[in-house]
Image: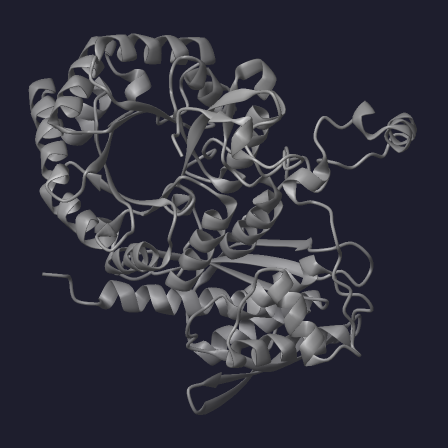
Length: 540
């Protein structure tokens, strides 16, 4: 399908939520470039393993994004392997790898995306005075030449090359026009205008893009990449569309460096809800938005705020009496979107302690989880344990326990059991039993509280000396039997000469002490995995 325009004939009647047009109308279709796995993963504390990255990429393909920026291959061997796996396994979207204009970056990116059905290299260089002077230590002439040579080199490997000027909104517009012109003539097919530090205001961002589009005469697609430092990422992206951009770079839940990126769900639903005004839409299957949001939140450990637009728990909630009455009489009195259209309603999975393996497996398959026999057994055992303590288990509960149970490919330590004791007249104590390969390890500890004691026992059992940087507990679902969702960030290496390592762990259970212990052990396992990766010999 031509990405420039879609008509009513491209969707079935009544399929407004998943299509891109309604009867009797035509809209310009915008490309959605998703950078959750690259810029999103650069958020502090997020460290996705290969399996988790592929799982998110599979869901992004179901969501219908046009481009998946799978990672920054030169950053590590693990990153290269993850991008390779996504490129070879994910069909449909363009798979992009990020690279500086440095030849080594470009060669590594080309290697990583080489097996993709449709491959793209996204290369960039900074163009603002502050970046050129203090970071690159290059002159404007040198940057211009590096940009040209970088794009030319990328075109040796792929036909689809995207080029970005880092910190463009703080760069000299005339110099930007020179660099973008050189990149286009060298073979770049997409030119991206990044507001790298979230500095621009919507009107000036639109003016800058309009100026550049008029100065660069080559036939290219313009893209916008906006950050949320001033809370304007979505507004700037939409302003860019009005000025001629036909690709928007986004991240699920708006995650990313510092305050984050343009939120996929917000910009997509803004375009969908107001398309009769703007005349633009996307090919996103909006009914997959809520599931995608939950998956990314679970695997990254980044909770979605309840007041978050589109996917927050309160996005379609009504407490005030006037609002409740209005919605009961006519939903559209207070809802400009149908929650069904973003996947927030529909059939609920009701499972309990009497459910068998067949019902459990069918429920997972209906939710999009396709597990092998070993994985099903592992998840089923955890489900049965939970069902003894929780009367009703919803689809959200299932997603949480499956993601928590299967988030790591191979863990150094596995928790077998935990026992804790405490009270007003007892010192809080905890005993854990862990398995490491064929070895069983039992350890106990006393702490300031039962959670502290549990974490202390795990620390003694694993001999990992790490500092607890943050601890967060929330509930996955409502009610007194809600699943406790604990996220922990551990930091190690500060007291030694080695590199500082930071890892996030997540655990869910109806018992918040058990959830905390699982989260702590998860973070320890990730610290060990990070240590192994950093000790691995460098690639030749």
